[in-house]
Image 1 (tube, rainbow, N blue to C red):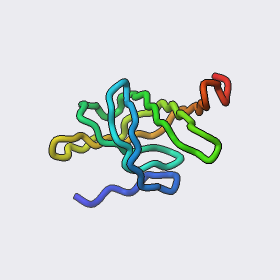
Image 2 (image 1 turned 45 degrees about the horizontal axis):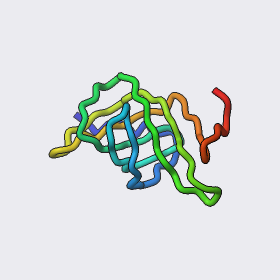
Image 3 (image 1 turned 90 degrees about the vertical axis):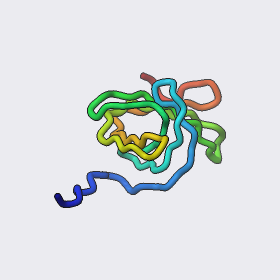
Image 4 (image 1 turned 30 degrees about the vertical axis):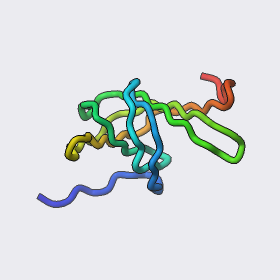
Length: 102
C-alpha cells in the first residue's frame, strides 16, 4: 500500500505548545491554518469532534485560541496518542474579552 497524499491546505509550522483537548492536556506538535497535530494520553476516534484551547503569546499580549475540529487521523506513539485535527471553527480571545462575536 502506498503512502497517503498529504491533505493539508495550509503551511505547517512545528510547535511545542500546551493545549487542552476536551479538557485533557496535550502538546501541539504541528499547526497550520487548516488544522493541528497534537500528542496526548487520551484516546480519540477518527471522525469524532474535538474542542481545543491553546494559549498563545503574541506581540499584543496573551491570546487564547479556542477551536472546534474533526479528528482525521489517530496514531499510537509509545505511551502517547498522536491526533490530527482539521479545524471547523476557531475563536480568538484576549485578556478576558472576546475579539470576535460568536
